[in-house]
Image (cartoon, rainbow, N blue to C red; front, side, top):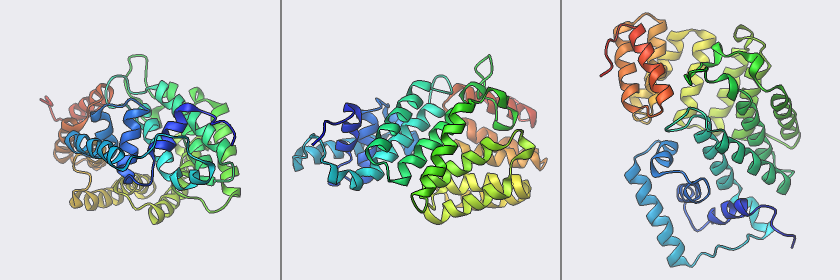
Length: 315
């Protein structure tokens, strides 16, 4: 058996043992590999710190009671652990892309997730999902220099200076997406990479093919019907068909309660209400988003928007 190519990735595959529940695998690995705090992991799972703390305790107890070895996984078990491994890399990257606390972007976490993604692709070169995830991370990370201004404040996608996007990373990401598609039917990471590529190929915001992005989100919802995907789909619909169409979808999602503690649900709803000139309702939604947002750059952005709609002192 050849030597394991990366010690940190070995740890990820080891923690993603099938004897552990998927959420436990991912939470434990985020703590062990990424060094993420309980608060950061709770944000990734859209749950409370208490829930994550209990989940970590149960995972460690299961490892102890079942005598699960921290050993080098043989090649034949890698595919069965792949979904958990990709989930870990995705969540580590997400924490770097929009961090829970501190600066908005943590390039160290993004770069490490991308590095480990490359190792997974080398280990399993015929699997489309690792290739799709690597493509997705590269295209998103290409925008890092344009996502904050000189004061460290957040810059929305439509307002970013696209000349500051990293062209070589976009080109590599698009080439990887083509490669992933050649390997078979795309899973959720391949579809998300296709969505990111649609944004990347538009030279300016008005050139974005929103109907194509809506169609991709519909495909993504069919294979990954999560509330967060539904929220992102609603944003795309709002851009393609107008804010009222998007708000209808967001309100339907909000009524389920699934994303009640997710600040982006409330900030998205607030923005759509703002665009419809429903200022009082918009201000209320911005206040709720502020209650939940933890990153200083995001909070400053929400405070400015609250003032714009006449919300006054956010408290």
